[in-house]
Length: 484
Ligand code: GLN
Image 1 (cartoon, rainbow, N blue to C red):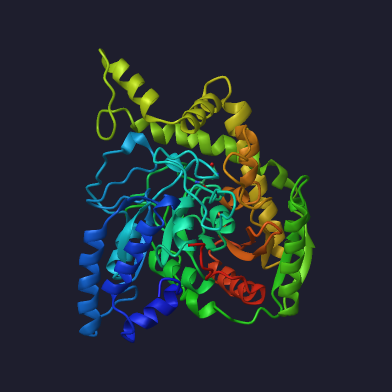
Image 2 (cartoon, rainbow, N blue to C red):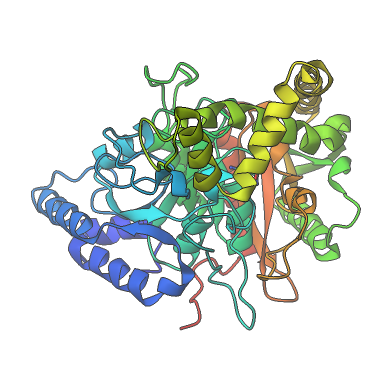
């Protein structure tokens, strides 16, 4: 039962093929068995079994809610009341939140069971899950060499692909849901900025951060998205846009839908195989009745540098709250300033420090106009690019990443090359647009590859509709068995 989709699990539970307690026990066993994946920072076995029991009762009484008894994994960046939340950092190694994030509250209110909190790059900064204070996460597709799962939601992606949970939550500031989904052969959806409340999510770059689902199928993503979406008075940037029944768009015909292929996404140095899969994806959608249109997004080439100015700028400000006084890690010092300095020197890892340095630099008096203001101007131009494109097409098809998962030790050694992983995903965050990564196939090394769809604001329904068509024709072995 562990390799079933959320949709099938829901059916199995309501038909009493298995109970939530049985299911939860099965996943807890697997989490232990595949401990080497290091996908979880915290496992809440007792609490999970307790809520599974309650769910079984409600199912027996005919009072089941939408996610009744379904075991999920939660990225360790969502505050969970009473459950340690670290954001992958030493800085929060002992932090037990006094309140629940809106996204996780909505899942709990729908009857979901939380198995635990998943590992992640420290403060969601990274593309390989190698910056976590709690160790590297391993991609379940690893064979002879251990592969990275992508990042920063690598723990969630690895847990879903390795069948350690039914589905998981992630967050995406520049690609952190879609890129690990692509590396692990699963579906990852980043909603429109504002679709889901950010209340109770550890902030990285507040104008770019969005929560979203990592799932085994597009339908599962639709089911979870509906539950976690909606206006929240605790987040002034959350939207009042109505939330459609996303699931009803699964399997809808794509006849006549115009799919744009942006020529700028043909990047020097990207793998030939990805280009082939990209062509194949377009071909499959064409066969299903869509119209393929070549388009141009001329400012895309500036997206990555723009992101790596805006995101660190916001991060440097957001992370100033970690001073060792109010909560989390505290180092000793003889003066208050020394406590601050030592706490931040010992509490943050290298990548986080790098971002804080870059962020404070681009915001500093002499450089603000040259870097930060200019980045905001380019952000506007990138947004305009998309608006123009969406006059000609309904949505866009691109690769999710320029390469498949790499092995530990073979990762880019300098940070800037590592940042290239995000080249195709950051544009959607910069423009606030929704995007989904759907598995398309395995490369010659048998590593998964994904394709990305990007739609206009609040058109996640279109992502589900076209994503499910792509999923169906790609016939990717999403419910694979991992090596024992
Ligand atoms: N890999 C990107 C970064 O390191 C994106 C991270 C994210 O989306 N949280 O900033």
